Image 1 (cartoon, rainbow over the protein chains, first blue to last red):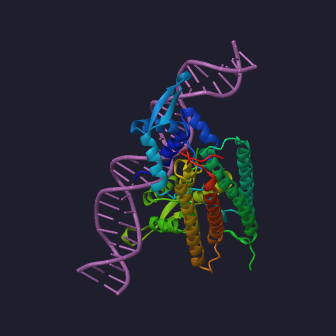
Image 2: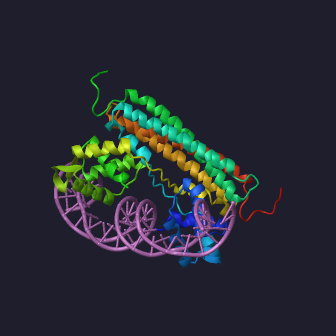
Image 3: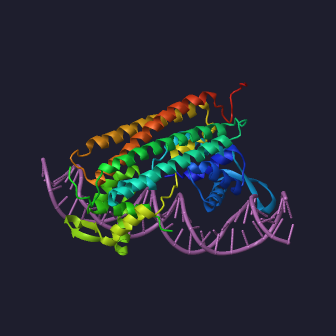
Length: 186
Length: 186
DNA sequence: GGTGCCATGTAATAAGTTACATGATTCG
DNA sequence: CGAATCATGTAACTTATTACATGGCACC
């Protein structure tokens, strides 16, 4: 009944180090967002809920109303529980891949173009991830960075696979036919 | 402003062939759900909204209140527009991968176990996809089946990559350290 | 006559997105 | 003193999940 990954994403980031909502958003945008995206209003909302649960506390205040949060012992226990005992939900939603099912509704050249664009975007995303990896502070051997780099490696492999698959798939389209097929047979 | 992939998933399935809400749910559960999952209440809700938009119509009635829907010309045009002109949103959410970022909160043996479970589930999912592929009617060369098989191939490659990555990542954990590291240095 | 599948929905809640709204501080 | 960035939130709306609720038809 209680999955709520965003809640635990915020908790996990705060367990790594105390932060304000603004700080968290930066971390979502530059790294965690490749795996679980969030908006500003969600993050601030979760900070309030986590505080109400007693899993985090406002531990410091700064200029401009800045409020920094830290994880409590209860929060750390909840995080470990979620990591070790709550079965990850496998609800998949991939907008770009969904469309592939329906490409028979387009003429073959447009379907092929869609898949080639898919391949190109995979390449671009792979390059972006490589840039993130190369920007990572080489001396930071903290556990968080270590595991983030493992996840990043998965992203690199994913984009490589995606690019190769989409290129292959585009080549299959010639022989595909459409719902309104051209006047050929065999 | 108008993304709503589930709406177009239903539209796309109906464009392939007329179906009832019940039929659509079966197709979500057995194939499309690997890419975009849906619940019963969502599907029936979307059928009502698509009808209100004029993109589908109730084209036949059967026993037990069965209502079969078909796509209209307007619906087919909308589907093609979505396929060819609406930029796919790349909002990613992967619960299982999110946890990897926070594995430093667990002792190394538990982190390693998590990744090995990840690998095992990738293998299982790969086998399940292969079973779906092998059940596909070999004589059905419809465009929908053709493109569904392309998407399925992507799933097979994804699960293979995931399994290999998770196995590799589990092997990296030895040298990882924890937020509460054992008393060693160097 | 009973089991299993067919078949449809509503209500309540939770989660996520987008637009709106405001203002302080720092650095050049 | 102006621009960029820091910093926080609310309101309205859309999407998604879960639990509830009902009943017909076919086959053995």
